[in-house]
Length: 265
Image (cartoon, rainbow, N blue to C red; front, side, top):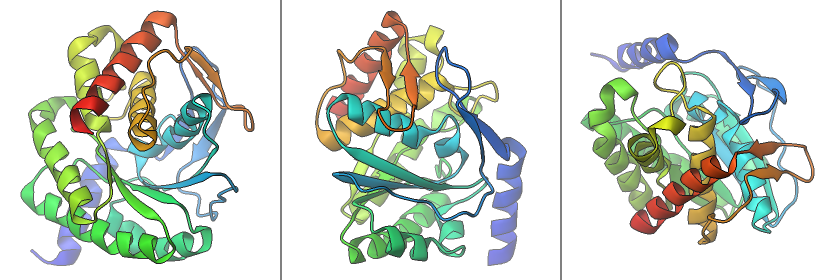
């Protein structure tokens, strides 16, 4: 099968499960706004001590994971600015061919967090590693650090969790970058606290719980700090983003995040 046929087949698969629009919401809150994930407006990355660019797809933009990361990091006392280029159906290769090099060069982020689909099959694992390596060269050219955000398989393919983890961990090792085991936290949350399901209604995209626990993991890993003990309600000082959890919800998600980070640090 030729390259064009392979790419088109992958894109058709993603179109079946990825919505073209997503609303930014957090637990027990009205929507902050609706993001058109197809917008090609160049992202802005404000000045801060830590400037993080996210490159990915709907697993990143559903519920605004970058915004949740900025909010959680701020609650721990860190000055973080985030930007995101995340579009439906996109793998890292798609970002490469639609101008992400210019974005990285213009923004010169401190960290670039990359993700695509689960990438559990051997050919997809190699695909992830190859394009993470290519993008990481651009990131290092502007003085930044690459990072791989481990995602997760759908509920119907939960047997593939180990393969997803290995794919993202090996890609991170290949580029000597950060490894953020968010997928392991979704697995642990689903197994240990089924009442706080990390999956949305389609059994693939994250629920609000899934997004928040992923944000906890990313922040805890990057800053090497625990998140246990943070209040349930967190408000971003600058843009009004909010994470709002009840006490038992916050305790469960924070416990899962800290245990996963400790296991995979």
